[in-house]
Structure formats: structure tokens, C-alpha cells
Image (cartoon, rainbow, N blue to C red; front, side, top):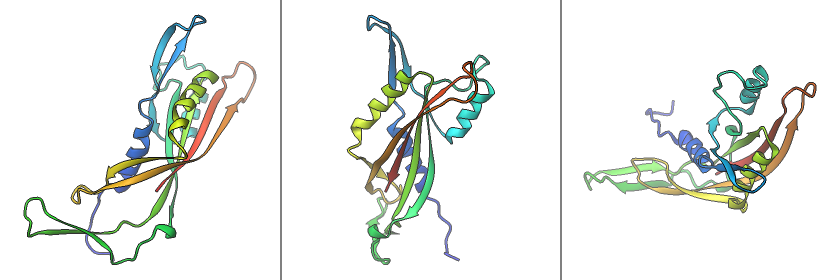
Amino acid sequence: MFGADFYHQSLRRYITIFGTLFNEILITREDSNSATLKSLTVPIAYGPMQKFLARLDGDPNLDHQVAMSLPRLSFEITNIVYDPERRLTSPVRNTKTSSANNAILITQYVPAPYNIDFSLTVMAKYAEDGTKIVEQILPYFKPEWTSSVKLVDTMNEYFDIPTILTSVSNDEVYEGDFSTRRAILWKATSLVQ
């Protein structure tokens, strides 16, 4: 219906942009004299929070060989919505000459303006770990962080992609008796334009 087949991995790049923002978070655990006992790199994975919580429910003490440890981050796309306010007229194209041959003109229609909503979840065993992670994220968003990204390799053009932090909430999940493990969750929702 629409013509030639193409795949520029644009959505994949947006997911990578978002995940890369949070992939080098470090926390330390200290003793009562403020001496560092342990330094941890917080792992991040694409996937829904419920998947990771189900893993915790299946092994509440995390005493089996683990594929997951806390603290950790997870993120996922929650919504994709067209944004008519950023729309440009349809026939507008980006053009450039080929680097191999100046006689060849490469064109691309201006991208459609979609907003991609992401949810980032911080899961921690200890409340202090959760707040350490959140405190390393919040100062960078006022309320946005802008990344410059090449979205289509053949065009070799960079676009500024803002990631806007829209909300942050805290939830402590207590289900069952006192011996059942609790989950401390921080959830941030962001909009990528």
C-alpha cells in the first residue's frame, strides 16, 4: 500500500537513547563511620516492572541462583501518541548529497511527530538504595534532558531529542505477612519527543 520496504530502526534508537541515560548509575553502601563497604553498578533492563516483581515473588529470599539482584532499573514503552502541534507540512523533505557521489541526492520526508511515553522503575531492597538512585536522576531533568542523536544513518543528520520527566512516584509493596519480602519501587514517567 505505501510502497517500498524500509526499516531505519528509529523506534529501537529511541529505546536505546532512553536506556542509555540511566545505564551508569552507581551507588555505595557505607558503614556507620562513612567508610565505603561496597560500590554497586545498578543494572538496567528493558521490560515491565511486573515481570521483575513476579521473579521476586517466585523466590522471595533470592537465595537460589539468581538472574536478578536488587537494586535494579527497568523501563518500558507505555504509549506512543501523535503530536499534531509539532507537525510540519507533508511535502517537506530533508535532502543531502551522497558522500560517495555528489551527483546522487538522498531525500527523506520530515519525520512524523510522535511522543513516546516511557516508564522507568527503580526497584530496591533497601529504601536508602532507592533514594540514592533517584537522587542521581532528578537533578538532570529540569524538567527535560536533550540528547543529540543520528536517527537515520544514510542522512547523517543529528536531531535534538528531548526527554521530559513528567512525574515521579514512590510505592512500597507489602503483601503477605511480616516474613514476606517487601519491594520498594520508584516510578518515573517520561515523554520522549
